[in-house]
Image 1 (tube, rainbow, N blue to C red):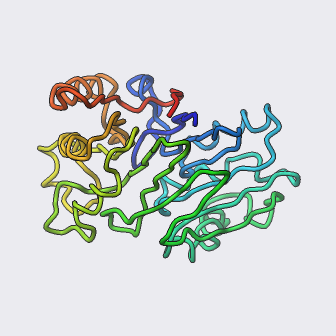
Image 2 (image 1 turned 120 degrees about the vertical axis):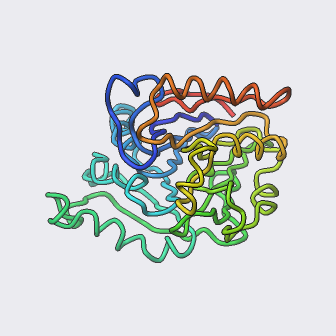
Length: 276
């Protein structure tokens, strides 16, 4: 499986000279399976960039997995050019209750109050599929989900292919277990021994009290979580809009020092591609 990061920023796109290295687009991850098929995680502003590859490579179908419907995870969908092409198809996956809301979510942000092109102008074939509690399988890839700790119901996804495991767990608050809907131990069990964990690290520890219940983690707690879970490589992501490249560089350096031996930590960089 090839993994390409198309959006690593949290909350709102932040273009500019201070975010060139790690990127300003909001959440979107492109997975290319071993058979060449595409799975996309979330439809933040980074999804727009994917249009160019889809058109160039003449790809006519993708599977899109939505963690939840906050703006920074869906705002790229109307700008994804292939949805206006009749020969294109997209299957959108979500767990409950996001699944039951999918049509309203996508139609809602394309209302004339917010966007000039209505949902009815979409020419591509769109299907919706629910992620069951037992998980699903696509082209030999086993996919399972778990709720995260976030103000809106949000799911993390685990992808298992050819004995390797990737977990995408954004928008999850690890620091304040006193208000957690999902126990720490459940998230630990879900991610344990994964080859790659891509996890929310929007804040620093000293910022967490001010942002309690906002549904995001400190990078320090994310590192401890990865150490406890025996993760091989941790990618910090969902950077705060105010976080500059220089600040993220410092965080990644401190995170690797905190990690010690056995755990590799990297800062998720927009446009970077790596293999599972």
